[in-house]
Image 1 (cartoon, one colour):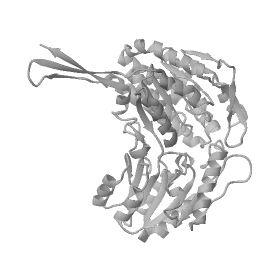
Image 2 (spheres, one colour; image 1 turned 180 degrees about the vertical axis):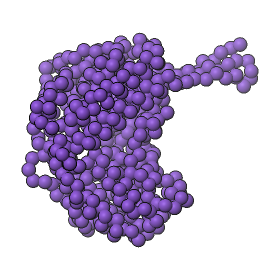
Image 3 (tube, helix red, strand yellow; image 1 turned 90 degrees about the horizontal axis):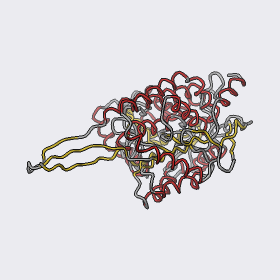
Image 4 (cartoon, rainbow, N blue to C red; image 1 turned 45 degrees about the vertical axis):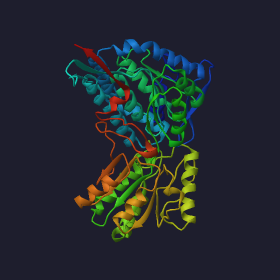
Length: 487
């Protein structure tokens, strides 16, 4: 991609706050820079919202809520369908924009735009399927009417690693259910969300339904909205540590919450597995999004009979991955999001090596500009290594060996997290046993990717609350009302 094309996609995004259907600078006039993680260069400046700006966004959402809740479900769905079509039409420019601010290779950015669009298509169809019920009371003297209504103004906080898909996964069901929103994207990747707001406005979303505030002070802007009382829902994707803070803040107003938090995904390979498929799946589960995903395989447990061969094949594949700026032809591994991310990955690898792990490939940063870390494979990683307990969020695959099924499950479940687990085996009985015993909200059985807009996404333990996507995704934005009827 030429510099002119890169400039044009950045220039096409309005870099102000989107409040009440209007683009506006922050009240203070402050802005903050958005960086290209591959070069460190500043792409542009965007508005830096204050607490007053956040409150103005909530004012707009609260004012629009009653009319939006009464909006015909079919028309809500049609808005989402038009936005779906627009995202696919603009896939190339949106993918380039995402690569510039987040770093992932263009092929993956194209895939994310398509994935993000699918949430709009899915929830466009769900908008007209919000159901209720009618029943005779057990004593026969009355009737029960059950209906579902939008929960109300919702606060949506999205992460930097999937800057568009994590937005549509929340915005889609909120629009379909009839909820207005204040969205705060991650400060590292605000451009994708601002572009998404433009798409929805062009698709006919009424003023005030979607409000976007970009800020470097997320706590200062969002906490007053949580404590205000008019917002009735918080949906957050991010770290468990931040999730705990938000839950405490939500408690005072008893806000409805759904959260997709950290992960520490185990990847189990048994002796009877198709090893070619297991290595392919490992590459998907580990290297999708440069390893910067809550669903990324974080701990590889391989049965002793195939452990050496699995490690050899995985090392061969990882060491051959082309690294570079995501806009370059053939690049598979882009930069990590920032220098802090690189430092953390390096610390985790060094910690494991000090404790006796063997580095088979990688294990170092790249010289030159940008936040690059080599694809890395380690073996003999001890259970006490930090990376066994902490999310790596980078291109590092630590391998440990197990002998028995029970041993593998004990190691896999020895974590406070429970988002997803991966299992490779050709034994049907073992597949069911292990899948049921894994303490995770999702399982990839002989496949390395589980995310799908038509499936419920979410975790157990400290990996989150509630589910996004699937037939249950819209329920997170609906309240059930029971009406007792006397005859």
